[in-house]
Image (cartoon, rainbow, N blue to C red; front, top):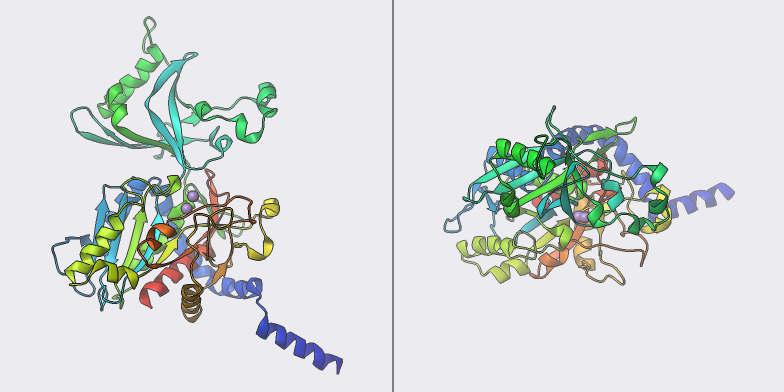
Length: 467
Ligand code: MN
Ligand code: MN
């Protein structure tokens, strides 16, 4: 009698209650080998593409190899055609034309390819105490202390006075010099250690060390001049050329497996290239979809999606509108039938800082791609807040395709918050939901993700395009 009752309760619990952790463990065991394989390609990508420009360059090469050609708004396309639009070398739209074209709306996966980093000021080079340094202005939300005393590399582009351009990447190749931002030794750190963490490091402290040799024994500005001479020899630039430049300092280390079990990847810039990569691979692998499938790579998300390469710009709208008109459709009608997976990372539960999370509504490593119905802060402010109907559709889609997924929020209510590109797309009257890979140490120089979650993001985007 007792046993019967126990079994009944167990059956009822299985039928009525959720157990995300145990179903995730089952899927995890099944998928781990495929996930390990998939992560190898990702590690190469994330090590090679550390800035928005480098990600676009990598993507153009990969897309062309996969049969994509540059989009021509004047041209008529048919099912299976593959096109891309490169917006100023810093953002992209890529599409595979569907059987029904855009007539039933399009399917978009949108990820951003900019990450927090250290940018140069327009007049950066100076010398002080017989050292040559660069003044910087950080980009995006960083904890400044994390960017001191680590090896940095310099990436970007300089436009010379005569209009010619030079692309720079130094600190990544074997044998390259690297750079760093110094920190005070603990022995002399009394004043710094007495300050609050957020005040102990100021933006003006983030100066990059680039030299310590004078160009000669006599004269003025010998240390600065020595560096400028080297830059001139290597890149043909003078000091004033640094005004028309975008030079970015990022961590110089490559991606690495994390853990004895190699189940995770540590790298700079998972946010958000860990979503961009599976969104691209899923598009490359989706065959000929029913509805036109589009992967969007956006710039400037980390500073509010501003500027003409950010998703608050109309470039994605223009791309879809051009396709709609070529098919004799009104863009607004296409948009109203369209949907978008706003592919951006979520904050994974960190047991060391568990008090910032609400355990029942957080995303966890190895439970699969993480859905966020809403993001934002202080009462969902600045969020998209997907509808129950669209979330219901996505959930069924992922379940039917056997994709491991989970749902969670970014930390406790009123603990902080964050935004994504979701509302920039929702503005066009498309259905949008946030979905992405959970990350540990987000926005730090060395972020961590799980290979299972990365692979399930790929499966999710592929299922979405193919549905
Ligand atoms: Mn992000
Ligand atoms: Mn971010």
